Each structure stands twice: as C-alpha cells, then as structure tokens.
Image (tube, rainbow, N blue to C red; front, side, top):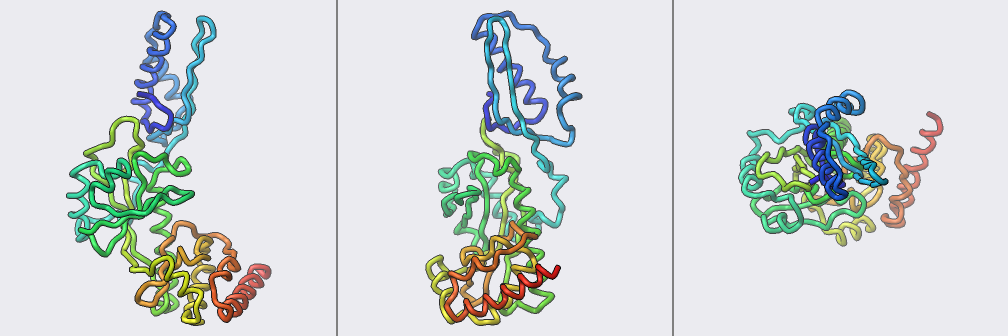
Length: 315
C-alpha cells in the first residue's frame, strides 16, 4: 500500500503508484489506460536523481475534477542507505565479542519494530528524546554497552536515515578522544567508543513501516544518576582541573550541546564522560553551563569564558 511516510525505492514506488492510480480510477468507474512503462521511463530520466536509492513519501493525493484525475506525490531523496557508503572502521566487526550476541538477538524477531517488541526482547530503555525521538537502551545479556536506536514505527529524523546521525556521533567521539589523548586529559575526561551495528536483513518490518538498518553500539560509561550528577556538578567536589579540561575540549571540538550536565555527566570513577557527541564544529555558548556550577566554580568558569570570547573576537 502506498502511504505517506513510506520508504520506497524507484521500482517499488512506481508499481505501488500504479496500483494507487488503478484504485483511484475504480472509485469513479473510469476506463484505465495501461501506461506504466512509459511513465516509469520518462520520470526516471527526467525527475529522479540517480544517486538517491531510497525515497520518503511526504504526501500523496488524488483529486477528481469531472473526468480528469489529478495525482500528486511529493518525495524526498534519502542518501547513504547502501552499505557501501559506510566506512568499514565505523562498523561493529565480526571479531567484536558483542557481535555474535547481537546477531542471535536481532535474528530472532524484528526487535526494533516498536516499543512493545523492544520490551519483549528484554531491553530496558528511556522514553524517546523530546526533539529527536532517539531511544537509549540496555540489555541484561550484554552488560557494559548501551544502544542508541530509532524504531521502524518512527519517522526518519529530519528526513535522514539513521546512519547519518550514527556517523556524526562516531566522528564526534573520535575528535574528543584525540583531544583527550593529545593533551593528556585521561585523568579527568573520557568518551565511549562507538560502532554501527548492521541489523540482519531478515526478519524485516511489515510493509508501511520505516525500515531502519543500523543501531549504534556504545561503551557504557557507568555514569551517575541524573539527580546525583546534577548534585555533583553543583558541588565543590568538581576540581578546577576538571573544569579546565572539559572547557578546553568543549570549545576546541565545538560541542555546543555539552554545556549542561546531562550530556557531560560524571562517571562513578570520577571522570567526566562525553555521551552526546553528535553535534560538533559549532560555536559554544559557554555561559549556559553557569547555573549548574557552585558559586566558586562559576567564578572560574566565567574567567575561562572571557578568555574564549576574547579569542573569538581577535580571530
């Protein structure tokens, strides 16, 4: 069935569009002219970018004006769907100890179909994030790792396939790790290693769902609870060395979303963990961190922010 929100390739789109056309004609009992091959060839050559393998159907409508049928379908190209566009280094390799466990788990059923299937498979998970609908999950049989994913029942975030965002997160983590190692900040900061796991082709979701092909696998940073983390950030236990280290990496990498405790929580080992690495290369509004700090640490953070802003103005 051709529906808004469906993901289609070029061939299946026209076949399903043809059926939609037939059904529309049957509604008003008009004769049908078989012109699918001509329409397919013409539209393929004239209107479709060959680099896009998948298309998101935004809208499809049929209007009847006397004996004239007007059909309109709005599509958006989705890029990067094929596995060839994913660098090998981004993928969870067969040699990784978690890979066989995930293969066995995700081959048994379509786990990411919806929240119910995710729960039935034994995952515990957060509510979908407010703006992105991202889900963060854990599984008792795979300790030491967390999983970030989108469901087949969810629309694509910003009309882009999920691997687009997984690549951004992997790239961000690599940039952060480089700064930590280069400036010897391992005593204060850490960032999880991340990989993309390619879901088995079967079982596939039913027709009408938005087929997701990858989930993101991350090392569990063993962070404090939300309440304990906010309390810790607001205490004098946060050293000036911690503040200087995290300030440097945030501004150096351009981590604009890392000026709040939720995205840079303290771990139980006393280090700050960068757990949101998707957005980087941006200008950072450092003052957003001030309300979360103790009065003493606010003074030090303001001095760092002043130096940062002066440096931007000079450049």
